[in-house]
Length: 332
Image (tube, rainbow, N blue to C red; front, side, top):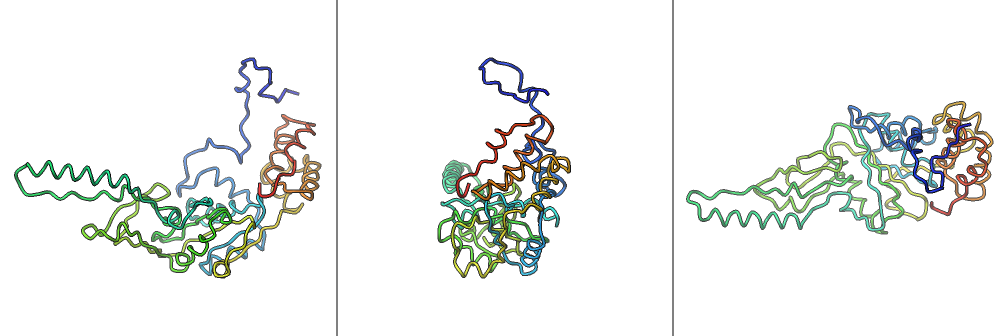
C-alpha cells in the first residue's frame, strides 16, 4: 500500500506536497463560480447532503408561514448552521446572509456600519475644493455628497431590504452575545424596519445608493429601510444561556438532538457513499461510545471515516482514529 504520509518529519525538503489528493468535499475551497442565484458551490454541497427530519421540517414550515424567526438550539456539530443553507438552496432564495455573533456585537452592527472618519476626510476635501473655486469667476457649484460610499448595510439590514422573495439570514451563535442584544432585536423582528440617522438628516438628496453586506448596492430613500416580505431568520444557539421570554415568544423554537445511529448512517452515506458506511461501522461504534462519555461532533466522525475508509489511502490506523474521535471540552 502506498505511504499516505505527505509530511515525513525528517526536515529534508522533498516534493511530497505534489501528491496531496483532493480535499474532502466538505473542506473544498477551490470551487466553480457561483450559480445563477449567487449560491457558492461549497454551500450548495452542504445543503444537498444535509439530513433533515420531520420535526425539523415542521418547525421550518411553521416559521415560514408565521413569518417568525426560527431559534435552533443544539450541541456543536448537529447541523444548526447548515440548515439555513439547505432552506435557501431548496427554496431558491439566494445566498444566505450570515451574521456571526461575538460578545461585542450590537444591533447596529447587524443593521449598518458608517465610516465617520472617512466621511470627515471627504468633508475636508470638499471644503478645500469650494475654497479653491471661490477664486474662479462664475456661479457657485454644488458638491454632491458621497455619503453612500461610507455606509454599508450589515447582514440584518440587507435582509430587510425590499424584495420579491424573502432572504435567509443566519444569526450564528446568539448565546455569545451581550445580554441586551436579544431584546434589542425585538422591534426589528416585529416591524421589519429601521432607519439610518445619517441619511435621515439629508434633505437635498432623499435617495442614496449604499453598499450591502453581499457586495451589491441598494437605494435608500429618506434614510428608511422597510422590508416588503419578512426575511427567514435562523438564529442558532448552543444552549449555553437562557433568552428573555419576550424574545422567545417571537420565535419558533427547534431543538436539534444529536444524531442517532440511523441518522448517522444517512449522513455518512450522503458524504462518503454506501461503501464508506459499510466499511465504517466499527468507527461509528467507537464514535457513539465516545459521545456517551463526552462531547464529540459529527464532523469528527466524517474526518475519521474519510481518512480510514474514504479513498483507501489510510487503513488500519487505529491510533489515528482514536486521535480524531477523542471527546472534546464543553462548547467546542
